[in-house]
Length: 463
Image 1 (cartoon, one colour):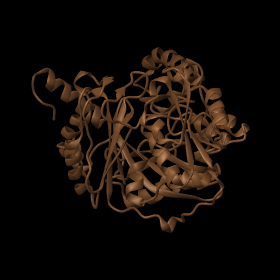
Image 2 (tube, rainbow, N blue to C red):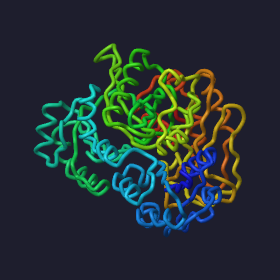
Image 3 (cartoon, rainbow, N blue to C red):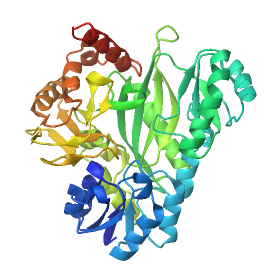
């Protein structure tokens, strides 16, 4: 690998360019007209404009990206996350063009991107799955029959979906009958596939994911991350490792992630996601269930890097060149605790309304064990055309208490003039006893935000 084209923008493009430079690989940035002056463009050794601001006319245009690779002399493509990163057709097109795709094979992306097929693979590998349909369903009658067997409430999910999109919880048959057509149409629009599948709704679930690296023959895990603090099924705060996970459950879950990855001959960095059910009303034991696999680098990967000392993007690049895994499982240890806060240009006091605009002064946190992944700089423009993520503030501590305390200091140092951000809200969140105790599930943050909003409407403060 001599020259790498980064088929992305923002902080992840900056992150990939830096990792490539550390390995002596030259880089090519692609950019829309809106991103002509963006940091990732200046950091790269070369840059190619690929279209107007709209992602559908630039970052999502496969032919434009392949032409940029050809014209710039790139011999490899890294998709980052989002955009084209989990599209099997893109991976295949890159390979067919004679380029190296930094990620798993197109067939694996397709297999694991189909949530029904992924569940079948998991079961074949002996990995527990949430009770649900064996295959996708494409009509209301089949969905109603399946739900009767599973038992309400059920989760209605897009078979080809991911990233928390297109998910609905239905409490009874009436809700299922009324909601299925719209959900199916939404899935068809978003993913080009209207099939849905159903699974049991776990009332008190934690979202825990296991980071893996594979070279096609061998696979290692790099422990787990806690991703339960979500709003509208989008992660907002992540931790490595997950607090409160029983040691035996951790061992079984990480082993399951490795088995699943080996089942498909996984090559590159990937994440196996689980629900952990520790509802004391049902069982005194934590149980975990496979939900999906993300075949790309994750937004929250820095937390794993801070506790393990492994540069995941660099390992992706090495694996893509054909190098065997440099790590053995015994080489991977987790030390301390890391927390990541996704700072977005959104206004929490206005129902997270996006806040694009011109940025003035920027003050980023620093000091020992504080990492900031960002594209943000003074006098830059927050575009309305793309995701609102400004920065990821990632903090490490020798234990979780220290990491949370250091997070408070780091967030207090974060300041951006000109646009609203979520940084202040996270500072409030750190005061919550349930957060400090690690006592939460996937619905906890939504409940807290609802109480916070109600208190603000009454002129008080949330708790």
